[in-house]
Length: 115
Image (cartoon, rainbow, N blue to C red):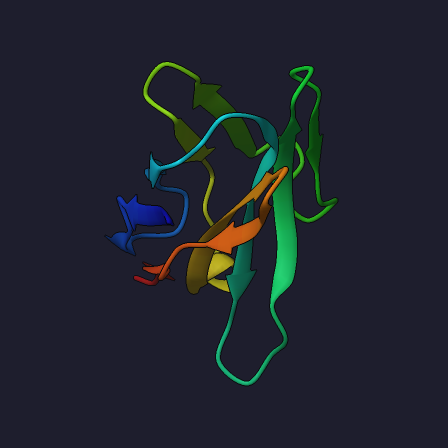
């Protein structure tokens, strides 16, 4: 059984920063990719960023240049550094891990950008 636990969400003013973490536990032998998604109220879940097994990082256009995804393989943790946050970044953020055994999601962490 694989479990993902996100942390680091909260309330921040526009222009501020937050760092999200997603720690994985369980039977993890080979990670294909790790990524972040978000879902705002009344909207569909959207992809934000991913880091592939070879270290390649890809971003949605809406966050490119502001967000940075990284990972710590030893800790089985993926991070999302979010800078220059905007009110439209407000959403519940979920991490996703794709393993050879399937895809797994965390429970989400709320990010609210408001003055």
